Image 1: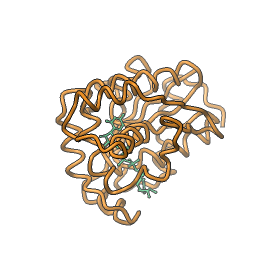
Image 2: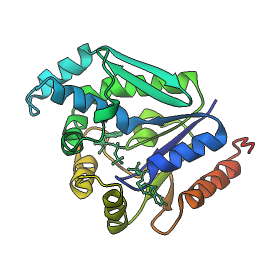
Image 3: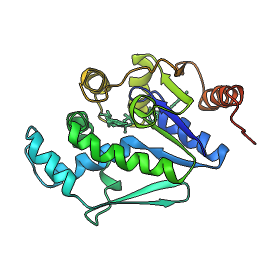
Image 4: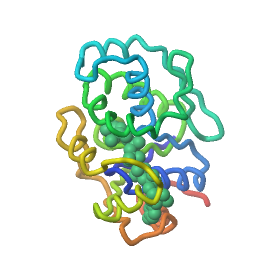
Length: 214
Ligand code: CDP
Ligand code: CDP
């Protein structure tokens, strides 16, 4: 079993790269950001005051979170409801970094994410996968791209998303901030295609001795 950790700032290409890589390797693809987005949607839906860290932490700790696997992806149900249609709502984009900065919220989701790695080989992408969720994996990548390129990518996706603000919040928080792990392989994807990024990752995995059969 293996865990491939992919971290990086918003719109650097993590989700698209992970999806393609997981498809090529025939393993599970886990977008950890969708867990934080789902939790944020549930908090917004419950109309909790967003600055009330203790009420939000208790709410998330008490929530029934079901995570099942379907065709190589995770499917979440929060208190029996499917958050999928709301994950990229402007209100979620706006508030997800705040909710993700609360350590007790992170504890719940980190445990859930770790449990997936105990069951299956996977590619997991996010902000703290190599640094906190799976620090022991030898397969760590940090995907970057210039701020202009990332903003243009998000704009092309038609989203209202202040990525610079979110990156600043994610990098400066105390709990599991976005950092480049010392042992991560950094890829600047500004001038690379998705295929280009994925082949660089596969080359590196082979070099590190992962038995990749394609
Ligand atoms: O797709 P994008 O890179 O814009 O964001 P995402 O991966 O969907 O993550 C949304 C937000 O969730 C991030 O801005 C972080 O605040 C939070 N997040 C986190 O704190 N830790 C993770 N491992 C993944 C996401
Ligand atoms: O998950 P993250 O927010 O890091 O990025 P994404 O949602 O996977 O990618 C943002 C957009 O950039 C998508 O439309 C990708 O197709 C595009 N893109 C990329 O991710 N990487 C490249 N090398 C080129 C384009």
